[in-house]
Image 1 (cartoon, rainbow, N blue to C red):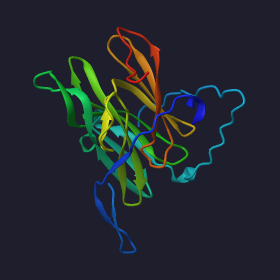
Image 2 (spheres, helix red, strand yellow):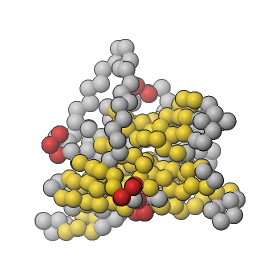
Image 3 (cartoon, one colour):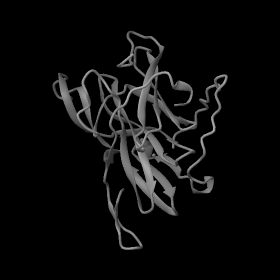
Image 4 (cartoon, rainbow, N blue to C red):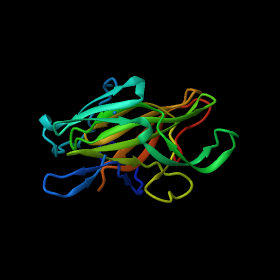
Length: 232
């Protein structure tokens, strides 16, 4: 659980199949984003020791770059180059706003508009993407996706944020506000979000049995007109 182990919540995780690739041994594999690096390494708490063993050799780590002003992510892994379009990243967002009427809606299927930030997990080689889905009246609706690089393609998972209502399936989440960055630290994923009023918060995901990871909690860092953590 790393340095943020005091807050826990268990939620579902999901994957979207993107492309079909022929495996050299005849099996069908169905799978189908780099921001400026931010130094956000918390001090190691007294009495704790991070000793997570990398599952992927450093030479095999994906190399990634956000290109086209956030429209796409270009990555190299397993000797191949892949390009992921922001619009490929889809998720059902609960408790959001209709873009035509600006009225609240229970749920809305949304796709990525711009990739804001990306980070590679030095333990697994998985890639976290902070993605803006839409903007209404200068308020961003955002989400986090996890890319699982595979030979011949990649899997796309959603890092799910719980809310007042139970999430109906692994393809749903509650929205984040504007994302400043996503950053892996010793296997945990830190997501800093903010809003136009000056509120800032840090969302933490920890490793789980799928690449989607597990929501661990949200910490309000700075209060503007309101608090942006949904469950704290």
